[in-house]
Image (cartoon, rainbow, N blue to C red):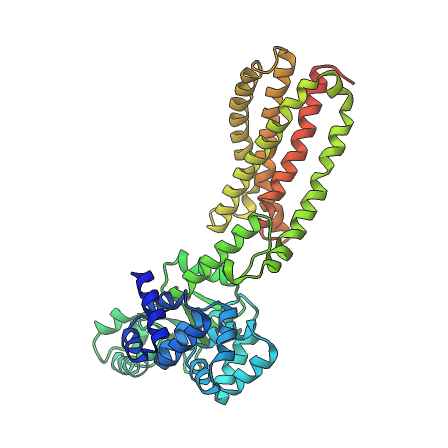
Length: 448
């Protein structure tokens, strides 16, 4: 259905049948409209935006990729952009302005009334990826001195424009946050009941400078549909709703995946990111890991005599390297995931080390026996096969342990644990694997 609608829009625009196009777009959900226009050329998107209601156009515009937004800013008239920009949420405005050239930012800010301009600049001044950048100023709050009737009147008056009315925030007269109130509690209480008697005083809030990942963790932990954002004086300045957190979870997961693959994260989708950005993000990691991994050549060169006496040892090298990298990667992935979910904390490092060492011993023993037996398909030399089996046991224990510890080391030095996995753990395990293998082989074969 989505593809058909896109084809229809394209044909309608080609024929100039804007009346039918406008009827087709009327009363559609902004998310559906975004999907309908996703594959259109930017010039065709501009035509669609001219036919949308102001509030719908602003919401759809905020979902576009930064390069498309910039193109549309240049294609649409000043009045059309002013209408869209004014109807955008302050946090969406700030996100847009972050991606645009300074001259365009100045132009767009000039379109806003003074109070909206000040609010947008205030959001821009908060740290990137902070709660202040994410929060919405559209929410309902009541004072603890109100009655239920007065609170309901305020909900009716301001609730239509609020992000949510299911969670109502309770403040003092100076807007100091004191608690929250559920809509159902308000609806089922007597009109003259003081808010003081029915609100929940247990405060769960974040500050404007709190990292967005921490916000997501708090909302997930306490199963919240909205959370208060306060300043340093505990005054309520905004809220964050669950819709925004879903986007953050996706963004953080994408960032972790990029880091675990050994590359810097990008904020735009694949086809909207320049190849040069990917080259810049990926190449430094690859160069660094290449130089680091070249140490393996030095290790192997130390054992040239051993390989000349027993060339068959080379047949097991790839197995040693792969097994260590695989085990270390599995271990680090489990620990990073546990850290992300709050299941594992920094103080748990020794428990994790003992646990992963035990797991490594069991897995290493099974793999060692398997490799020892399989080795007879390559050579009948029992000492070489035993060396390979024992080496794989030691490598698995080492890789499993170091893979579990690297995320903790990252935490201590304030490095994202995701960076400490993937290619890095693989490279470390590769180098250690070669060293362990040749050390055990030369010891058992009694080669000096």
